[in-house]
Length: 204
Image (tube, rainbow, N blue to C red):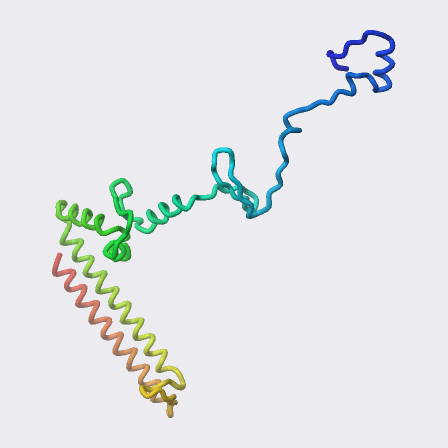
């Protein structure tokens, strides 16, 4: 029995036993009764009292990025090799996009990087490596072209320059052409790499 209950008479005792005493009929309120119970479904979004937007995921709640934050993050990730503390590339231009594909950084950061290499005496090594990578990239594209040509030649029929469909009359002829194409490209590839390695060795 609660210490707050004051028993003044036998009647109070009787009421307590019957459960009709006024202390037993008072409504008890707690903070839990004032807090609304919200059941959220996956995909539901809401804004809290601080203006932050949230989204209900499968088993957890995630903060929703604003469009401004998303644009900034995507911009930084699109040039992963730029030095974030000094890079000022906010609106990439054509040269920035070109350098991003090659170096992963904007044009100004490439200029800064190359200037630093010259000061450190590493420019020739860097330039040699860049030329080698460009040559290998060209060779890779040439091999893709060769594979596309071989694929077209391997078809039973193909469109000629007049748009007519032609068929191979003899399987042996097709095999000989494909074999010759592959052999000649492999020989070209080996010669190309040998010359590239000789250049690389001679420049060191």
